Image (cartoon, rainbow, N blue to C red):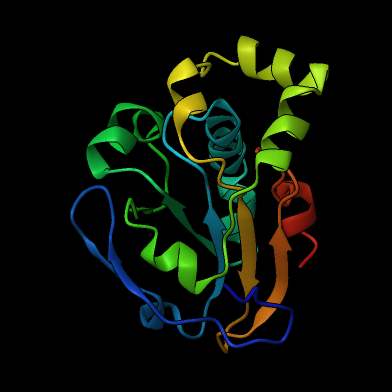
Length: 175
């Protein structure tokens, strides 16, 4: 899987969000988009990142940044876990990994171990209210974020190094 880089054209896709609505990246032409790929709906690190995006929603909206999130889980799983946070942005279920593959999202047992040996990360996950051992049996998908400009060009491609490695909202607000 080829990873995308700054100045690459965003890869077009059509998916369905967890409420059954069609999400077509082409419909976001002329808008800034944060395309964010998470692991699975039970992942506590992912749920903490969703929480950060929810808290930063108003500031992101003022900057004109729309968020589209993806999980490698079914819509039912997402609604049961991450979706219950009622985010202000669409979440696409991609359990077949189709869109993930298009964007070069990878799995890494090294990234999983890096996450698990960091006591600060583990403590945050265990006290977040999102801790769930179910996510440990799932593939060690490493998250990624893509900031896409109004012309559908990637202005920042961020491939995470561990389960919780996303672009912080504070950094997104600088674009």
